Length: 134
Image (cartoon, rainbow, N blue to C red; front, side, top):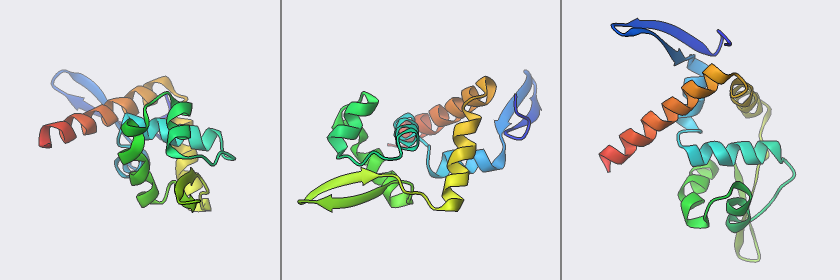
């Protein structure tokens, strides 16, 4: 377990781990859904890809309607870029140095099992809260 990525705490039921602030902020601002996590991983692992929504959906094994909102949100946040080609949207990832460092930390953190489980748990908490508020 990477201590720089998790904070320890105590509850009545025992020890718990929480994401360290840089990871927590990245999850809250960018990777706050499982679909976004998949999109982020796809584009950062395939930096030369430039494709439309249908292509991105196919690559990550989802339907275009299931990723549309999340992909547009990542464009709005600046993590993914969108250009128009012949009237159609095409998406790609071209990160500045600061954002690249944040993405690298996030992806590196996914390599640690405990940290990865904590990240996924946090994303699921966010998704559950979003569903309750709808």
